[in-house]
Image (cartoon, rainbow, N blue to C red; front, top):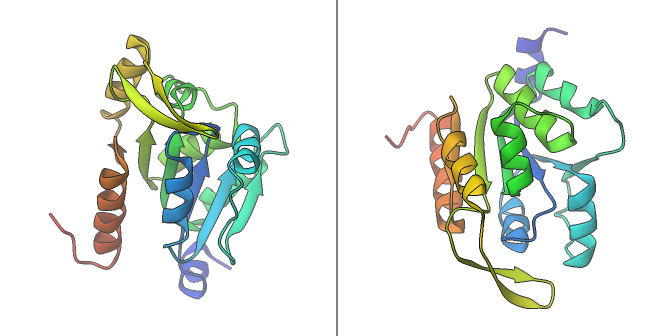
Length: 188
């Protein structure tokens, strides 16, 4: 079956990649629950965080865990199965690897392959301000992102076909804008 005929029989889905950042992790899961047809790519670290934050995934979500060194599930991007990749939350480590073209995890491989396949990316970068409050499993804690973390977030904003957001509200808005664009009602 050709790629074009396959996408007619099975319309492209959302792909969502979770990293091991706890920053807005539960909010990301809540947003996943609001979308239809999601394939979830979970890094080893994110798998641990899912258990720490006691999160359950929505029914019908296809789950791909980091179990192979070659990140075999990312081949799905070449099959035209996705219209959008959301990386949320995106840890400073993941953002740095994406900026420098390092794809050695399931999530960074998803980002690299999405770019190579011209799949639009929305990235919710965690480290976006010099001082922040994040929610840890035991409650809120202050964090102080390093200058390099802030610089990498700024660099990622320069990538083609990539939207970088810095808050849950911006993430919601980016998803809504993407839904409108996919429906042929571009908001801009």
